[in-house]
Length: 115
Image: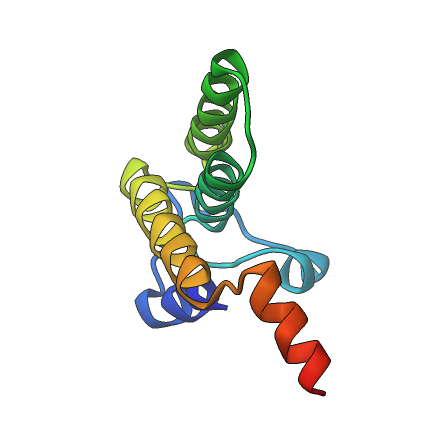
C-alpha cells in the first residue's frame, strides 16, 4: 500500500511508453516510481535474513535473488534504475516498519490467554 500510494503521488512513467491494455490496469502498476517488485523483494529478503538461520551460501543467494528481481525490471524496460534503487530503499523501510510492530510468540500467547 505504501508503494502504491507513492506511485500515485509521483506519477512517474517507465522508460518506455508502453500503452497498457484494460487487463494491465487491473493487474499491474501503471506508474514506475518506486518499483514495487524491488520493494517487495528487498523487504522479503531482509525479513528472511533476520528470521531464518541460513547457511552463508543461501544468504548470498537470497541477496542475489533480490537484486536480480529489481534489475530485471530495468532490463525489461518497466523501470528506470532510480525507480529500482528507491524500491530497494522503501522495501528496507517497510521491513523496519514490520519489525517495529512485530510481536514475539510470548507476547502473542499472553494476549491470547487474556482474551
